[in-house]
Structure formats: structure tokens, C-alpha cells
Image (tube, rainbow, N blue to C red):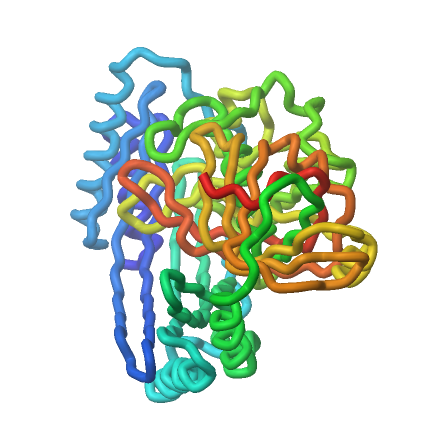
Length: 475
């Protein structure tokens, strides 16, 4: 019995049990991670699992059931149970649930991979991880850590509308961090923390060995750096911090299930009002946020989402105006939209839901050097250290690992514990300079849902300048 056969059996069983629509995903995932601390391997984890998850729609009620067994009998039983759950859900009064039209698709898709990360010898990976921490210790770090993570996922998707799609997505990433401890103070600097739908070449391309000494030295220098001043100033953010700024204050806010109030308990809803889609000013005219799962190698890339919708790019914000959302077929139908394409789950045993794909800021006309040179008085911050945002994704406060004063167009003294705060649209409308230097950042630990799911999201981002931002907030 093939994986397609198992998915098809589950779908047919759900239809036989009364579902008006059903789809099934067989998933097989292998994963591996390793971490080192202060010259020794601290953890090695290797895992492999597989199963089939079935989604059924009866009336306006969804049902979902999953089993770690891809035999014909188990798949059929799962389909039947998914339909029974859907039938029970349909007995609860609620708005009608439809699905926007989606032509049946057949096809295969694989993410780019030059070097299979699971084929690289463990001894080679261990030597790299240990060597990185040894270098950081030699350059002053009290706590030196390194890590990598790998996921290799194969999916087979079948729907009652005729879809038959298989995909293989290989994801990889890693990073280093150095912590220095002083009197009543500890400071951490990190590098990497970069992930993508690529092979081991992503990790080697980060040049972690070439940055280990710098990271350790900066963590020690931060112990005696001047504290971040408090007040209102011009703020320049590096692309690493911009990635999280986009993720938290745009990506989550434009998730249609949050806007509709379907997602609320775990991490809140959204401040956005669908009545303002297409007219509301989200940011300055420099702000172009694209939803693009087609970017080669970015962490939120795929060929088809977990509803079988082909990957396609569209704007979420165009020239500062809010024009698009992250949607699924059912949420788009309720909202009166004509596109989905942003539904994924973190495994065969979880119900797919609206998730960020690659949500990124398109580049501007300047370089970071030009932005700094054009700033008479301000602060440059980079690399996230802490974040807090309200449950409507509106008011936020972020802390960064490091900052520098900008005086008369030049980088000045280093600043420790830099923080800034703002309100989403006010902050984005203050963006007056944007760099052309895009980096495709990946966030592999985005939490959402109950039961909780871990999403892998991509965020192309470039350094940008914002005016009149409150910094140095400590409470």
C-alpha cells in the first residue's frame, strides 16, 4: 500500500461516513539536532515518525483524526472517525462554513538541497559544534553554546476534490551564542540563528567559525558598555531585529483566523478590521510586505500548502496600505476573499490552520551605510533579546542584544540593554529610510493553536530607519 493509497482510503472512508469534503495527509518526518556547551557536546537528538491525518467537513463542522499507522484498515478507521467528529461539530450552531473553489492539482515539489544534512557525518558536525564553543571560550565567553537543527519532511496529500500531491521539504539551520558574566550583569551575543528550506550548505554558508571570536568579544564588551539612554529618538534596526518586528507586528496581525476571532485563546486576535482591507494605512509608502511562499530556500517556502493550494505570492501591505491577509479556504470563504494558500500543520497529528509562510519587507533604495550617514542623532539596534506584544498585536516592546549610538552620521559608543516600544501602525508609518540589503531570516519556533503547534516561518528583512521612537524603556 503506497502513501497515496493510505491517504485516499482515509478520504473515501470519511466520504462514506457522510463528509461533504475530506482531505488526508500522510507525513513522514526525520529530525536531528545537536548542541554543544563550553567545549562538550551537550545534546544529540534524532527522531523519526510517520502517520496519517484526516480532515472531514460535515455541514459546517470540521472533524480531524490522526493515527500513526498507514495500513488500509487504520486509514479507513481514521477517516470514519474524522467524519463522526465533524458530524458532532456540525450540531453546534454557527456560521455556515464553505470552501473557496480550488482546482484539483497533481504534482510533486522538493525544496532545494545541495548537501543532505542527514548524510553529513555526526563526527564532522560534532567537531564543528565543539570547535565553535572552544573558540568563544578562548575569547572571553563564560558560557559558549552552539547548535544546529535539521528536519526532513515528506508529505502525500489527497482530497475528495481530486488532489494528489507529494512534497519533500528539507529544513536546516544553526547558530552560536556567547554569554559573559560580570558583577550583577550578564550579556549575551549571538550569531546565526538562521534557518531555511535548504541543505547543510546553509549552515556552512553562515561562516559560524568566522564569527565566533567576534561574538564572544562583543558579549564581554557589553558588560561595561553605556546603558541605553531613555527618550525619543531616531531608531535604526538591523535586519535580524526587523525580521521579528515583521513577524510579531505584521505577520500575526494579518492571520485571517485571528481577524475573524477564530484564534484567540493562545496568543490573541488582531487589531485589524476587514472592513478596512484595501484602504487602511498600515505604514509609510516605503512599506511593502509580501506574502511569498515561492522564495527559493526561505523557511516558509513550499510548493503547496496543506490544503493543496499552490504556492503564490501576493501583497499584504502595498505602499503602506493594508491589502492582503494570510488565509485558508474556509476563512477566505467566510471573509468573502478569493484566495487561501497559507494553511499548514506542524505534523500528521495536528489540524492544519492559518500560518505565516514567508512574510517579508521588500527592499528600499539605500544601504545601511547610507542610512547611518544620513542620521545626525539616533540609535542602531540589532538581534532580538526579548519581546512583548499585546493580544491584539498592536502595542509592543522589544529588547535587543546590542545597540550603538549614532552621532553626526557615524557609529559611536556601544550601548547595552537597548529597548524600544511602539504601536504598530504609528511605528510603521514613521519608517523613512529602508535598505536594499535583504536577508531571508527564518523563525522555526512560532507557537500557535491549542493543542499548540510549532510553525516554521520566513521573513525577508532589511535594515530600516524609524523616527520619533521611544527607547530605553525598562518597565
